[in-house]
Image (cartoon, rainbow, N blue to C red; front, side, top):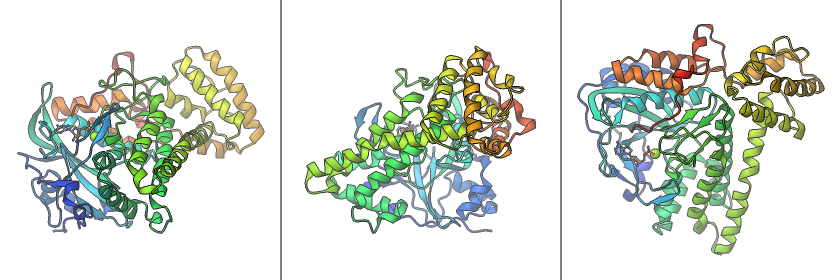
Length: 493
Ligand code: AMP
Ligand code: MG
């Protein structure tokens, strides 16, 4: 029998006040919903072991393997702008860390493994609905090239959980480069525990930002790099129409990965003020608010790190403000570069950026589908309008596209890029497939209503290759029909 994963847990060696040791609570009748063999290989975990009874028992929390030291991490966070001093892993456990074949250390984390000291009255469990949604979403993000936590396995527990109605229970084994959040720093900083903030920062630097180990100002460097990664992350979300939905500081990763998929959604038509989340009626976390919210969350991180910067707190504040002040430009550079590339242009000149923003504007006014507009744009000719109908038909008023396309063709002509190369570059950046809300909903409904995981598995297969035209999956490329539209998403914890 192949051995279980080789755990090496650096977080468990941090002071005991950083977490609570907690064993998963066994479940009645576990079975696999999905297993990610490719990710297992990367992690140095034998797919054969994962598929074995022992592997399943570990993924279900029914067995704790040697060397794993399950613990619930402590953190706080700003939820919808309000400070909550203690949240913590209430329905999840850090099983341990494994070092992959690529030398990278990653957390294995069981979401839905039973109550912990941080459960605050919750049952510590998850319905299979959110498990299916998170599995699909994080793997889709990774395939799009967007930094994200990953899914190693999804398990059906054979037990029911009580939500608005009884639903089958599930557990997700989540993989991350770190589960430290902005809220983890806030947990210590807001209690005045500067030494713990330093120790947490040292841990994060050693593990995730090792180039800072020899830096003169490692803590300033940490803030700078987290700002840069977060700016790139949010820009990459926006370029595919992703809305995180709950960008609380406790859901903001310290390593710039998309984490905590709850009531997330993807835009169909380009409506930038969209907020799908049931708990976000005022649109705090709407699509177009995400850069400002990321900046706000980073300011909360900066506050935590200030005491580590300089003895002179005014000096520290000036440094932090200068670094935070760079966020907007970093975000815009990444976003504009991405948009220009989506148009098949090489140069991020002001005219090209303006052209891209103009397209977003007419897409918005004409309720054009974001993904299809960009994808099909790649199939148009630089020197003729013969195929334009497939794009212009996406616009309420197709003529709105015609005027824009003329300006676009002028820029293409000015760049004189070889058409085959341009088309290939556009196809490699404009996905044909995203996890549209109605598709996620269909997969969830089938899972909950009939424990039927085929729709989920088909979707996962297609979303693993989002840039390939998959002729047998064209139904998954289309926007929802009017009766399929999902306008509200739920955490459904
Ligand atoms: P989230 O919505 O995932 O960001 O969770 C916010 C907080 O609520 C975290 O501290 C979670 O661990 C906790 N939480 C969410 N669902 C449950 C649950 N079913 N049982 C216990 N704690 C939960
Ligand atoms: Mg969370």
